[in-house]
Image (tube, rainbow, N blue to C red; front, side, top):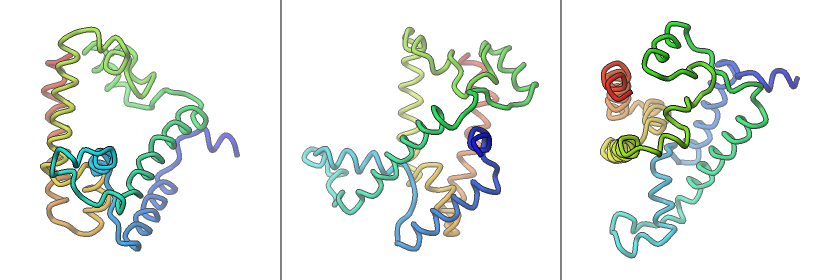
Length: 186
């Protein structure tokens, strides 16, 4: 039993569990998405005193903060107690391609040290790129009316055309960045 917990769980377990949670959210009249949690957190911390964007009944959205806390706690538990290894199974061709771009620990961990280690904060270029990327992600999530999880899970299950357009845009943008921009930056 313990060996099952230490392996990545198969799609035929994970997929129905996501569908079950989504069903519960839809049944209770709620929609899933992580980007709205930041707005709820800022409103709870008093940002509504200065900006009208944060002036709403955040207490009605408290459950969003529980979802965010659960995602963080679940990720911590999975990474530290339910994983036998930090190695990720990726294609050998992808490992070679990443090695050529300077990511030498590709396939050994989920977060390559070159991109996510503390030394990434040691250069002005890295800080600029992280800040620019954070701005684009935050702006894009608000402009698209939600994040990837909200559109791909909740929006598509509700047959919302804007979510389909957003998800297509996320994938196209990801492919462009991965194949054309990332090799230039690294």
